[in-house]
Each structure stands twice: as C-alpha cells, then as structure tokens.
Length: 192
Ligand SMILES: NC(=O)c1ccc[n+]([C@@H]2O[C@H](COP(=O)([O-])OP(=O)(O)OC[C@H]3O[C@@H](n4cnc5c(N)ncnc54)[C@H](OP(=O)(O)O)[C@@H]3O)[C@@H](O)[C@H]2O)c1
Image (cartoon, rainbow, N blue to C red; front, side, top):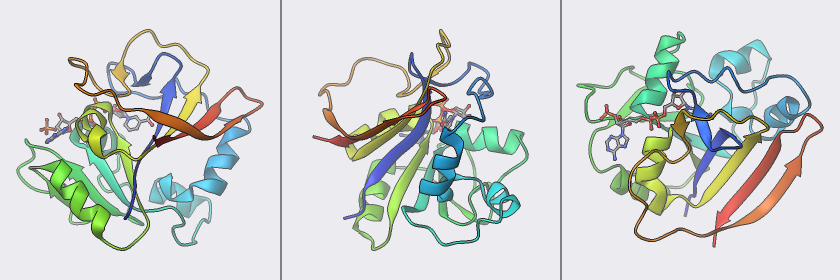
C-alpha cells in the first residue's frame, strides 16, 4: 500500500506560510538545502530541477496533492503546473475545471480519492499542503516529514489549518531526525 506523506516546511510555532500566503521568511542557503536536493529531488519544482540539471527519475514520490490555495500560490508566482515530473492533483470545490491539462482536479471526496491512490502500484504520495487540506486528510496521513525552521512567525497559515480540535488525536512517533548546522531540523514522523 502506498503511503501518504505530508512533507512540508514549518516554523517553530507551526506555520507554513504568512497570512498573505508568502513563504519567503523561510531562510534559504545553509547546509539543509543540498540535503533536500539529494534526498527528495522530486519535491523541487520541475523548473528548478531543470535549472539544476536534475534529470533522474523519482525515488520517493510519484504523485503530489495540493490544496487549491497552495496551487493558487504557484500560479501567482508564475507556475500553473509546478511538478510536471509527478502526477499532480489539486483539491478544490470552487474551481470549475482543472487549472492545467497536466493536473487532475479532485472536487469531491478527497479522502476516497487518496484511498484509491494508495491501492495503486507506485511510489509514495506527497501531500504538498497546505494546512487546510492536511487537516481534512489527517486520517489518511501515514507520515509527516517536517522541515522545521528556527523561526517564530507569530501567526499565519497553520500546519494543520484551523478549527475545532480533532475528535481523535492522531499519534505519531519519530522515525528519524537530523539537525543541520544552519539550525534547520528534519524530523520524520510515522503514524503509531
Ligand atoms: N511551507 C510549505 O512547505 C508549504 C507547502 C505548501 C503550501 N504552503 C503555503 O500554504 C498556503 C496554502 O495553505 P492553506 O492551508 O491556506 O490552503 P490549502 O490547504 O492549500 O488550500 C485550501 C483549499 O483546498 C481546498 N480543500 C481543502 N480541503 C478540501 C476538501 N476536504 N474538499 C474539497 N476541497 C478542499 C479548498 O479549495 P476551494 O476553496 O477551492 O474549495 C480550500 O479552500 C500557501 O500560501 C502556500 O504557499 C507552504
């Protein structure tokens, strides 16, 4: 069975973006960047991969799920189809049709769709974000790979959206962790 992994960058206080959707408060540079490129090259946008000459196949993920607001952010920054090296899905109830021929629209029952995708053969499924979609898909999240940046934002878009506390807290354990010299920590959690 394929796994759903929420692979995401977060501040110490649990925000994945500022209120306006921007993410430029996450520091770039340092020694964690090359580790991302080496371990998870498929999570880099296709344009970045091409610019860096990363032409290999996918090792970990072959499918990506994006909430509509995450996809919108890509559109605003000039990319309607950011991950053409993956099967791309956008989840939305308001988009009348898929925003790009290379993207499939999931307009209803995203949990059911994730269950279907998990039964297919292939590599892992990357839940790119954002927090609202992650909140809804939490029952199906098998792994959380947190790129934890040493930043406190004080507010913004939460890692798991907003709302009442979930009925059943989900427990995870740390499967691996690594702290870089630049202060970024990679923590991989698996569902207990
Ligand atoms: N730090 C990181 O690594 C990272 C990663 C990804 C994204 N981000 C940032 O996160 C921000 C967006 O995150 P977000 O939490 O605000 O929004 P989001 O989860 O990306 O998108 C929310 C939208 O997804 C759709 N959706 C969510 N759950 C649904 C369901 N159960 N059924 C149908 N549609 C559903 C809805 O679209 P409709 O309103 O169209 O129905 C909803 O408004 C962006 O600014 C992006 O830059 C950061």
